[in-house]
Each structure stands twice: as C-alpha cells, then as structure tokens.
Image (cartoon, rainbow, N blue to C red):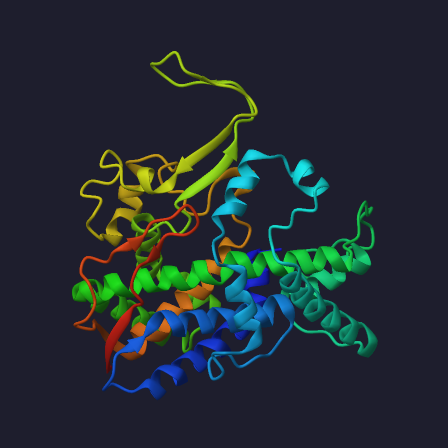
Length: 368
C-alpha cells in the first residue's frame, strides 16, 4: 500500500499540513525560543489523522485536541507490558484477557474509523487517502498500482472493519512520534552544523526553482536532503533495539555458539550504526557517509533504522516523506540556531522503546 504511486496520491495532504506548520512557526515569532518537537508532533498528528483516519483536524492550532491526547497516552512506554510480552506467548496472554493497549484507547480509535467508513459508504464519498484504499480492499480485496479494482483477481480475503481499524492504528503508532523525533534530531544537528544547513538550504532552493514548486518529484530529487535524513537515522536510530526470531539454526562465525531456530533475538541498531568499522568517527554528523561512493565501501546491513527483510517497517515511505517535507519547511524559510539553554551534545533518553532526546528541542530562528 505504501508504494511511490500512493505517496504521490497523498502528497497534497502532506504539503497542506506543511503550510499549516509554517503558519504555526511564524506565529511563534523570532523573539522567543521555538519548541520544535511540539510543532513536529502536531504536524505528524494531522498528517496521520488525515491519511489513515480520514479526519481533517486542526492540532497545529488546537494542541490539546482529543485525538492527540489519546494518541500520546497510547505511546507512553509500559515496562510491565514489554516484559510480559517477552516472557509469555501471545496465546497465553490472550487466554487470560491481557490487553497491551487500554480498552478506552481501542474504543476511541475504533469509533473514529468505523464512523468515517460508515459516512463514506452511506454517502458515496471518495477521498485520496489510505483509508479510501482500505475501503476498496474491504469491498473488492485487490487494487492495482493505479488504484483500480482488479476484477479478474481471485480474492481470498476481504478486509473487515476491524482489520481497517488495526491498520489505521498501526500507521499512527509507526508514523507519529518516530517521524517527529527524527526531525528533532535532524534539526538539532543542522543547527549545530551551519555549513551543512546552508548546503541543504541551497539544494532545496535550487530544486524548487527547477520544479516550480514543492512536488513529490522535487523532494525525490533532493539528494543531499536524503543524505541528511539517512545520517540522522544512523546516528539516532529511533527504535534502538529490533526484536526478531531466528528462523533457522545459525552458527556465529569463529565461535562454537549456535543460535537455535525459534530463539528470540534482540538486534542493537545503535551498536551497528556506531561501529567504526563501517562508520569512521561515528559520533561525527556527516551526511556524505551516504554518498554513492561511500555506500559502495560497506555492506547494507549496518544501516537498519527500519529493520530489514519481510518485517521491515511498512510505513517507511510515509515516515520518510513527511520527515523530509517537515525539514524542508524549516530550512527553506529560516536559519535555525540552538537556544542557549540547550545541552550540547544532545543527550538521548536511551530506552528499550524509542531513542528520544532528554530535552525538548528549543530553536532560535531568523527568516531567510
């Protein structure tokens, strides 16, 4: 569902929200420090509410909107839940009535999605968003790259309303805080590294002049922006540990240790991303690590912010796209600097859940 064609389809939603983000930044003014993290969270909330839930909400102007408050509650880490899910099987936990997410949260998001689906079905409303694609899957089971129903495809399973609720909720979990936090880390580094910031601004300006406006194709043409985002995710992998299960017996090279099939394995992204064998001087922020020449000098495996293989994050394209447009919105329009109150270097709040800064990102801005 997250193909390049689908990204183009929802791009106007993202740019609309980025224009609102710019308005919110301008309202903050240049005299006071700007809480960039809060703005980014409101920006990603609006995008996901629109694309995955079919809601046109105004969180950028109403930061205490119920949709955001419920979402924030969902993402609070619960160590007990984390431990239970690794000690006991899902079948056992289900048999004793265990719920990872509080029932009132499930009920809220379920009602939002089902009410929107009912309204669209009753009134024949169609909208270019992911919820509409899932509605097509509910009725026809298959769509092609052009968003057309494939009548010749033999259908084995049609999406139910509960399936759609689950998919929409997954998109919220995958794309809200992760994208906002990536933008925070990126802007922190750009504020510290003015030369990199200026180089990025020059590319953004040149590419937009070439295309005439910010389009999906223009964002894809911004090669240096892509390097900046990838280097941000290398230095600050938002999900520091990837839980996986070994699919076959594996002997660790040069040892007698064998990891048996079915063994739970924790992959430390932060360790791989900080290995000087692959990334010399790993504490230095250097987007050129992701030039074509430098990427050819190392294997792909040491960069896995979204995982890899069949369990790679499905929302990666949406997350990267809204992240890039959010960064463009700041850098195209403002010179950014760290507020004097900020700690340097940035102190990450290391946890088993998300790699997150201890402090909120406070910026000083000057209009370009």
